[in-house]
Image (cartoon, rainbow, N blue to C red; front, side, top):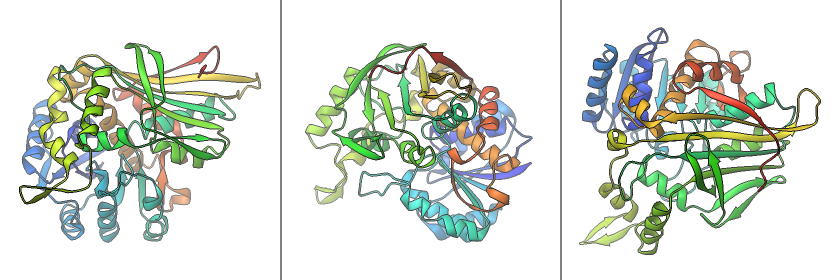
Length: 407
């Protein structure tokens, strides 16, 4: 049994803490910190009501390395689970190094002033974590996270090589709002409006944002338009599955979302550079975030399902030639809300964060010969993680398709 500190009290943090409390044999002492302590306290009340487990709650500015280090020292956790904003990854990693504590996150670092995310900044921490004998696990959400584990499970059990890989992320939920995002609006819009990139023949190919569209019939949801985007697991998969000829990431968006986003872009509301308003410097996208619905508030009204999975084509392990497999999870928004008080987009990230933490705390995942370092999901045995998905609310299926994707 282990003590853990979770930083971040949004929907993902709420799900992760609820699920930790539901696994007391692994998580014996749970602590939650955020800039707004009232959010932590509200989550704590829900956890207590649903599970009977009491958690510690704290206020912390995760940009402040010294303050975060002091909080870590006062609590003495074995692991810090970073579910705050990706801007804060490096500061929290610095605090973990300063206090000798292991680290986990769900999204890679992104500078505040540039809409660009990549693993380079965190991979550069490899020697520091290794020398300290500490482990940092990057990207233990769903995408990134489970999607990488899906790919490695296919490589272990179905395919000798992966020639092409497509990650398909569909949110078929309806929350009744004209325009709202199902996770942090600022991060969501930065991600969606960035140029698309996919891996092709040993390099990344860039195309304009939202310029490539395909329709796909998702089980449990139906036919949806999905758009080619860049997502961080493409970078780590290209590194750890070097034989891949092509890897792509697709996400579904409804026509109303695209129309609203186009208008917001055209009038400058998605800008991340500061403007002066009434003598005060503001960032338009941050102002937009303030007026949009809080994602955590969408839980009670969201209905429908998510469907996220990998379609991989490659040489079959059994020597039967080239085959295509589709491994996926379908999650119900209303069921996720009934269990944790959060909709399925938060649930599908918060549960894998808990499972990744369990992998570290139980020793199921550790560095070679117990050494420290900075690791991605692809570097570990997928089986124990996949087993916990089945028992912790995200069951998966695998089917063989008759042919590769036609596009």
